[in-house]
Length: 303
Ligand code: SF4
Image (cartoon, rainbow, N blue to C red):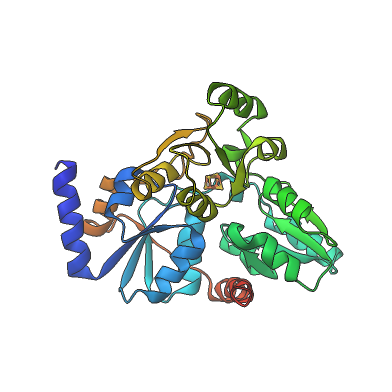
């Protein structure tokens, strides 16, 4: 079956079965094309609450599917169960529990894109776009931020009067971008703004014209007058930016900005998941889900 016919079939089956497709901003173009919602974790959580669908096909990494299952009583299906965020894999939950027991004065703040087991032992989750704002308002003076240490470092520079420690995990994709790549790009395109993700390293962020989460980058670019923009986050966001800004041209800051786990889901995987039940139905132990939900609910109080 060619892509055109497959897309038509997917649209037909979605309607027949009451399914919605949720895709993260970093998904492949063809998956974004057939998605009902494309966004970051927070936007997809909100969409899952608004949607009256019977089931959601979650196209992203496992922590996205788990997040949607944590907040929703709908069936959540993941087309490719091997798509797991490498940063999440670096976090040893037992070590974190030990830290928590030994340092009860620390509030554990985890990224919304963390795995469900991490959310379950956290006091509160934060989306990248609101991390600074929420952490500033927390009562606790001692914060342990997990998962991305580059983002943790960025937050610690912005939030004054708090002792912020970061757990030593990071996103391989954003961490690989180098200061030299920014310098080279500035030399090649001196008047073009360079926009990077806050999961990049500090020296990269310092040289960039703006740093933000995916949703902040999308909003910032929308308001730019420049007709050409260089983007320093995962390449999938270029599809979103090109769709929303037909008058602008985008280049990627570094060829390393491709997350292979975000790219594991193909159109064919989504189709087979709908027709042959090949996907993974997300199941979470109820005790863990409720604890993780508590961290998300605590976050929601600040939004
Ligand atoms: S881009 Fe980074 S944080 Fe996002 S899924 Fe890939 S490795 Fe994980």
